[in-house]
Length: 158
Image (tube, rainbow, N blue to C red; front, side, top):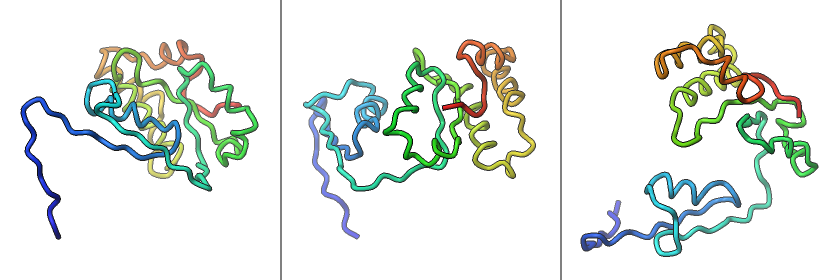
């Protein structure tokens, strides 16, 4: 196996990154998250790949902090298998001003109960979220979070 060539960079010189992906999948956000800077044409090159067929997920998880999730009722989304089958589930947003790791962990347990019910049969998502929130914020605030976003964990009517 041949090692990739290395180039010495002078102090302060940065690498240019090329990211390839589908349209509107978050290439710029990925670069911003990894580098801590805003992607510009000077440090980031993005390209969109045109594909003939997108995989249709069997399950769709929607950030309940999104005001426009009603858009899932639009005709262009109706071909998504998860939407056709009614497998659309709400999760709490994990970012406002920074990453909310407690919510990210709680969402992960909830998603596990949906995707792998046999492996997570002993998990009550609301109780697990309260357990996690107690560790992160010192109080069981699942119901407060659910109230603030209009619903807790569960299937969404789309």
